Length: 90
Image (cartoon, rainbow, N blue to C red; front, side):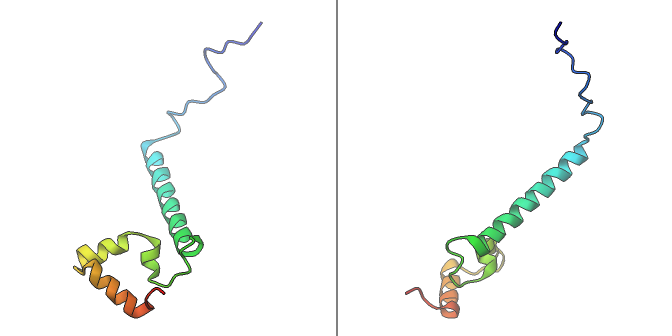
């Protein structure tokens, strides 16, 4: 005779052990781990990582957002300053 598979008595109830706080913590930790690993890849392992420039700009696009909207510096001025500091492409 086959076992009854309609009710699985050996699987504990997940409702009692998983709370919304646990789910939130897992989502936040996973997001932080993803962001840190992506920034590490962009700065050290990306094919364009050997080009000179600010490391925060290489790590994330938030650097450009900060420069343009918080500091009020236009992208063309940023580009001119970076070319003056790091050299022009040859």
